[in-house]
Length: 135
Image (tube, rainbow, N blue to C red; front, side, top):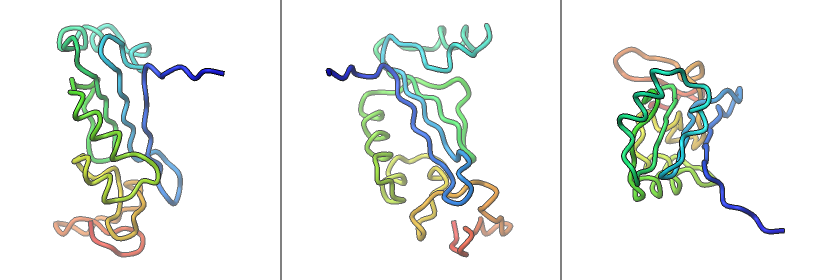
């Protein structure tokens, strides 16, 4: 059987402890609307149609540390960088290379992601993972 290439791809990162989604990245190639397009109302669709650049990829990010609303245009090099960063097995070093705010919840010492509930805030010093590592 021949495998057909996917039009879209969605990357999800789950908390190592409770499995809640920490980050979600949705990509749509040039000329294709995002998967989530079908759940949007008229205003987000109008915004998308106004700012989408023909020939570019579209990226939607939802995470504990960053969201970009209905998305943004992205070049092929950036798409390749993000795909590489989120390949299995995912590690902090790889994900950190994606340059996403919050590193998709990954702890640099544990090498696994945690959700906002499991990162404990320690005031102006940042946060600590469940094992006490600083973020």
